Image 1 (cartoon, rainbow, N blue to C red):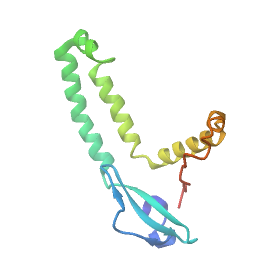
Image 2 (image 1 turned 45 degrees about the vertical axis):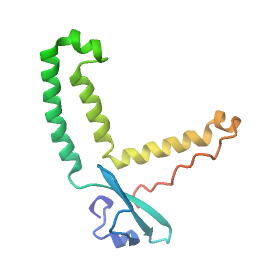
Image 3 (image 1 turned 90 degrees about the vertical axis):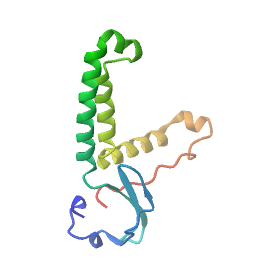
Length: 139
């Protein structure tokens, strides 16, 4: 409720299922009904997941630095396109972005706009074959 800027979920939702309909490592999805009567799903990031991931990546970063130091740049670059620490940093940024639902919403809206205006999809007869769910900034 706090993330939505309300004191109680009933200010936004007529119904909100406590039991998630889907669950993953970072977030879970709950069925709900908006006060307007429209059915929706609500994606909720698990409590403290960002903090736990950040702590985990600190440990992995230390191990990556050690690998870079012990193996040396010549060996590392023979198997990877960059230092191990750089690879871990790229992974860390991508995983932590998964915790940012506002960024995810923005990406979905950008993808929907691209789909709506993609002439190649229309020419191939694929317009409308991919559906991006409607998102709500503060619902």
